[in-house]
Structure formats: structure tokens, C-alpha cells
Length: 133
Image (cartoon, rainbow, N blue to C red; front, side, top):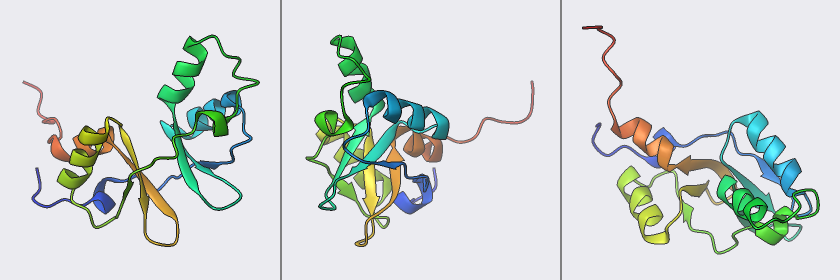
């Protein structure tokens, strides 16, 4: 593991932004197409929230119709934001204490990325040896 790796080194800069009126099915399709596990939900007043694959799964598991349920209804608005200059340890600590797997990364002007547990693990776990035994 490289010392003092930063969120900017691990984050995905593919930020899927949707509106609160998107249905859960629309959000799921967009997330699947972009191969991301979370979407940033941007409201008309520029407030940010996050909708994750787990939010969609929970809704479907409750028997709710993904064509009728909206992102705004299932968005987490009590969001912890990360700065690109945070260490990966700081991001992992925030995720552990908050019980979530994604952080929206902001630079003051809005979202610039999303960092997930998977992104952090990719940085912390060395690549598999290319030598076949």
C-alpha cells in the first residue's frame, strides 16, 4: 500500500447526476449503463444527495414499484462529503463510522467524484502477481 494515498487518487470521476424525479428504474438503468453503484441526486435548489444500489434494492425488496418510486423519495440527504485531499484512511473511517459505502467528493464548486469502498480496496490491495506458478 502506498503511503498517504489520497481520495483524488482513488475516486471515480464518472459522476452520474440525476434529478429527484427520476424513477428508481431509470436510475438503475443509468447506474448499470455507467457501471456505478451510486448516483448523485441534484435537486433544483442545488442540494446534493446520494442514491445507491442498496437504496433501490431495499425499495424493490419492500415490494415497491420501481416505475413509480422516485429517486427523491429514496435519496440519502444527510450526506458526508469528502475532499479530494482527504487520505484514504480518513475516507474509510468516515464510511465505517457512517455505515455507508460511498462518499461524494466535492471541491467547493460541486461534485467532482465518488469514492467507494471498492475504490479504496483497489488502492490498498497490491495487484496480483502476473507470474503464474
